[in-house]
Image (cartoon, rainbow, N blue to C red; front, side, top):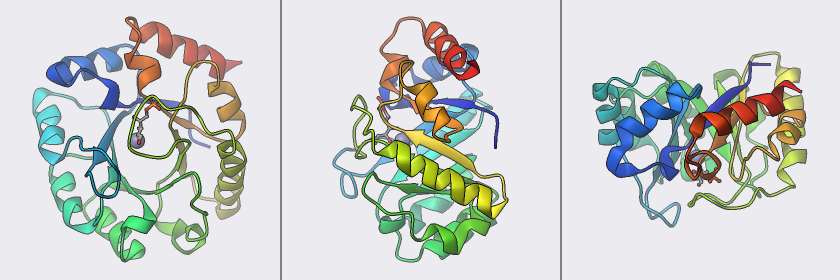
Length: 221
Ligand code: DX5
Ligand code: ZN
């Protein structure tokens, strides 16, 4: 199992001061920057694209950037994110015509690859591509917006995904995204997650460090 990682979702950051916001969460102890890409087609919202990822790298952000693609089609945007400095690129299997090909495109470009499963999407395709995965991301809300409530059924799905990872014998990150906060993070970790996306729980508070410290204290118990 990978060590625990906190991945603030910049969807809830102040976009007018994005560089400073990312600096601030990293200084507060975040491990990974979660970067939500929404296209107003696969999901009903429109956010940021490769230019913003490039801008963060130019600004000096060196931490891993975890690009969560909520776009359809998938393949034609992968190259742009590879060039923009993405560390992880994850996509939803139902948004790709050829899942294995999309994973290969990501890996061939030198980034880590992952699949994202919506709350009601089964994990069926996982077994065919486990050898190409660096990350499995389970959505614990329906994608498109920050600030929604954690769907409790995701805990069982986390256990299922954790068992598949253990059985496969490769160290794959198991990330959870949606409604994660200080109160539920421990239960989510117990169900098998090692990487925790949190948007509103962190950015809605004035003191990012206090929230991240409180999350780590829960995880240490
Ligand atoms: C939702 C996004 C999430 C979102 C999480 O579609 O993928 O990353 O920012 O936000 P919170 O933590 O507020 O649920
Ligand atoms: Zn996300």
